[in-house]
Length: 233
Image 1 (cartoon, one colour):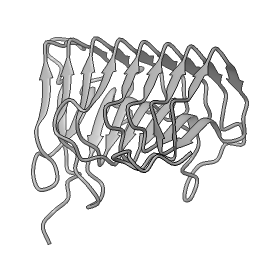
Image 2 (cartoon, helix red, strand yellow):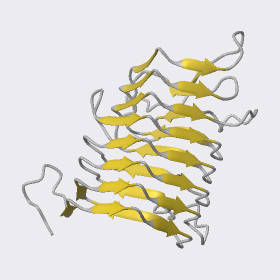
Image 3 (tube, one colour):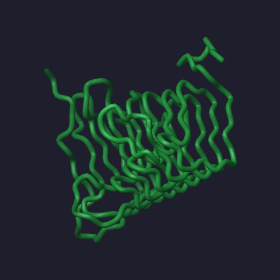
Image 4 (cartoon, one colour):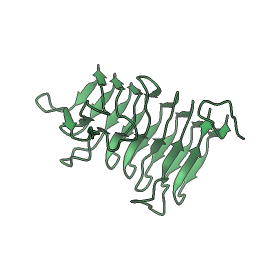
């Protein structure tokens, strides 16, 4: 159904996917495009992307992959062991959505991947999740803005690999911005440094980290600033 009154011109709305086992699918476990008021609740989502798509033009794989998710709710799901892909991947705008009380672990890339949005602070809420032991990052943000992370446990295994930070924020293209993210009251555990943010210039901007607990030794470095930032022509 097409709702032409939606600000983002959603193609479907008011759908509920609840209490399912979504296991061993070839690419994505759950895939949506242009959904408004979509609720994904209390599902078990395991071992999807079973065909192990990866690389160029393999963009739609993951436990949950949503494009243009408006006012969505992803809560109380168990998401694990999805091959070569994130547990949850929100792509190309996700206004007024919430990711809450999920257990996300041992996925093939990131636990939670946010991509391509341009918002002020506090436009999407990520709260009370347990995200750990994913292959690359607990949280990876690329060319996206406006998420608030509150009361989560975010953890990654100890490693010297620079791409395996617990939290990693990058500006990799000119299509939008990577800024205005907030991390409050989280437990963030990993290697030193375990948080990598982008340089706050050009298409990148402020990030907020307050009242978190950091699971590294007191003398170790928590933060590093990367060189990924759109530059003026």
